[in-house]
Length: 65
Length: 175
Ligand code: FES
Picture 1 (spheres, each protein chain N blue to C red):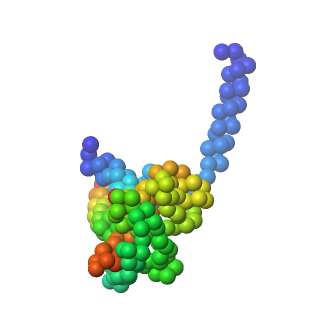
Picture 2 (picture 1 turned 180 degrees about the vertical axis):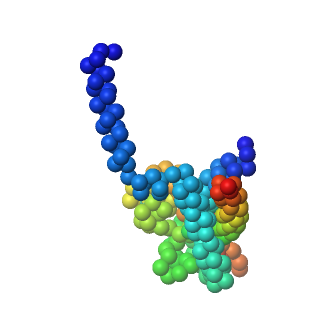
Picture 3 (picture 1 turned 60 degrees about the vertical axis):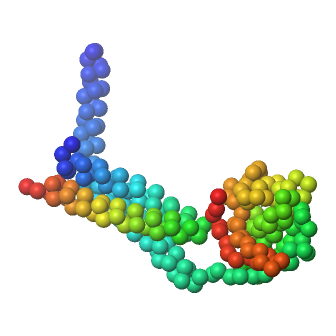
């Protein structure tokens, strides 16, 4: 798979990861499980960062002449 | 194919051409692969960032440190197989202390995790029972055993010292 396709599909992967992380953060918050909240926030922020990188890789490939 | 049919096909094609003419250009511009990916990326970022407030509030809550130490009862005041209601950690949060048949002390917030009815200790069956919709909880773990409740009762951590029972903390999810 070329870089552009990989970047394209990875964004959906990161979307799924973030949905999962958000649900964990909410459950952890209301269950007073602090470790779970911090874990979920960390995972979500890392995956958001990676998604941003992937998005710019895709953008560069998509719009190049 | 008969001429007749050909004729209708021809007409259909004409209709199709008209349809293409009418195509909503706006949709064409906004509903495409690029726009779809951009929207998905936006959603990813939004959902990812939405976790941070939970982290911040958890941190702030930590700082407040709600660990309280409260005397509940004298050991001698509670016979084996008996229970007693008290409030912990605040006056508005009812809790139940049980001295189980094997002489252990356990305590839970006794608001049923289904619809918040009070939970009672059933001495004969050695279970915590919520009479509202017949929810049963295990006395030793606080986990739901039967009926509608899906979550465990918040567990109150106890300490026994000098013949007295103290409540010293709480775990909402446990076991
Ligand atoms: S409120 Fe306890 S079972 Fe419904």
